[in-house]
Image (tube, rainbow, N blue to C red):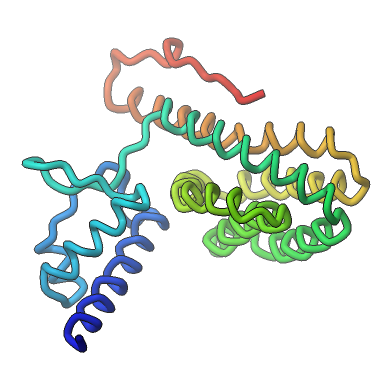
Length: 237
């Protein structure tokens, strides 16, 4: 029993370290993962690594393909839009529920996080800012006080943060993000639900659009024959 508990703990620790590397961008999307290399890096045997990767597969962060290997999940532009659409559905409904139940509490919680975001806008504090960004959106979900909605959001939260971490790497992006968040708090404080929803939708839509543009630029850099005019950008309305 003790050995089983220890092995389970090793797998949990390994999963947490690999998860962090995927979410923060240390491991690239679609990158092949070697059990041997991960075991050597983390100082454990292949058994807990294998169990850790299986856990991460259930979270959507890893793909295990028979006869091919294990990979960090890939994300196409189409996938990013689909993720954004689902996220938008959840957050808009959460905002509706949270404002109906206790608008002042929601506004206060969001305002406290935005105050911290104002102090973390430099490039050196980019990771802190992105963590606060994640916390702000989770706050909307939490104040809806619906466990089923929360569980649904948890299923995509790591994917959203993984995507966010590959985009918000400069002060300009942080400034625009902060501007959106400050305006969102003002609308919530005033009980202006329609304006808050409109801003929330456009704010969420920026992430998949920016990611799609990034993919287009990468393809354009790699292949002179690629034309960005053929890459259609569709914003969530």
